[in-house]
Image (tube, rainbow, N blue to C red):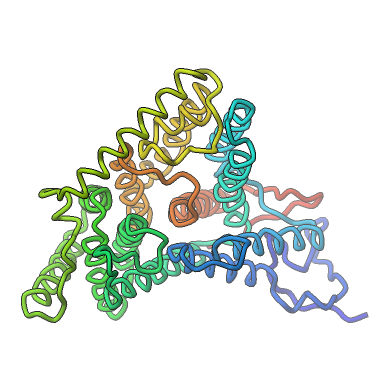
Amino acid sequence: MIVAEKQPLVGAEGLLGRRGGRSEAVPWHPGSMLRPRRLLLGLLALTGFVAPMDSIRAGGIGGLADVMLLASLGLLAFIVLATGNYRKLTSYGPVLLAATGMAFAGLIGTFFSVSPASSALNIARFTIAVCGMMIVFANAAENDRDVRLLMWSYVMGSSASALYGLVRPSPSGRPQGLSFHPNALGLTSVFALCLLCGLISVASLRVRVIGLALVAILGLGIVISGSRAALVAGAVGTLVFVVASRNQRLIRYGALAVVSAILALFLGLYALPETTAIDRLFTPSELTSQIDQERALVRDVAIQEIDAHPLTGSGFGNATAAHNLPLQALQAGGILGLAAFLFLVASILRPLIRRRRDRLVAGVLAMYCGYLATFFASNALWDRWLWFPIICGLALHATRSARATVGGGSRTQLSHPRRSSLTPI
């Protein structure tokens, strides 16, 4: 019988089981040398890289990030069936419960929706983007190094999208980069910028130099997107990170990147488009005012639907039209949907605030606070580019909780008949 060498799989045991404290070799099989957990981590990293590029479609299936995430879930199902090992979602429990509550409330509202098929499809998107991604994260990201890799993948994808918007200006005046909309370009640039602040604050000097260039690219991406919400989110996120991390050195690095970007504009190395986020925020044009009026009309329609079904809502069919997140939650799932949404926000904030002195976590906290600052102007609910960085923060909390448990000498039980302790990080 051919015996496989020891190598980690999903879970803590790897290919060697533990019975009574003794290692037991298991037979070799063709997939054992493929390192399924590393392949799962790689697929998840690719998902993070292409998540900000949601204009890239994969035929009629959906965005490329959707395909990558579905492939990750399929690979995870294969691993669980082949090995019987998977990680419990203990650290993700409150967020998972809140997201499930929102989906359930939306499902009830679907029975009162004018477009039940569209509502059911959007509920599936929300469930996969939140619950499905958390399940993959829990089984793929075992330690801080894995989570940092995933954070870097998102930062590089957002930077690539912003750089594309910088070098390929849009005829309409507002570049969208590789995103499906200029507002998405602005928000993904903000989210990546906040994550980048945390990453470069714990990186080597060489990585910090590269990070400064990315800071300038992402900062310009926010400005050229023309997104007022992104501009506000960036300001709030930066302030939150400075307060949470108390990193004076990073403030100097950030100031250097901003000065470099301004100098490049002054020297004519890059020309801003006619419509920028700063212009639209402080001196709105007639077109911007018209867009605001159209959104006000859509919000009136949402309020009418809420008046018609205040308890149940009217499903997820039109849940992103109002550009007002609490109003959208109430419209989609009624009172239960709004309560689940508020619980979802609180369950995300709680672990991030508890570990705010950790600079990596502070970056995710800054990103999420920036998102919260756009509550009454944004409509993102189930987009992969929104949830990927959020779940990175939850994964950091989970890995640190696991490390604290192992450090205390206790054992963590897998969802498997055998017991084993997690490997210290």
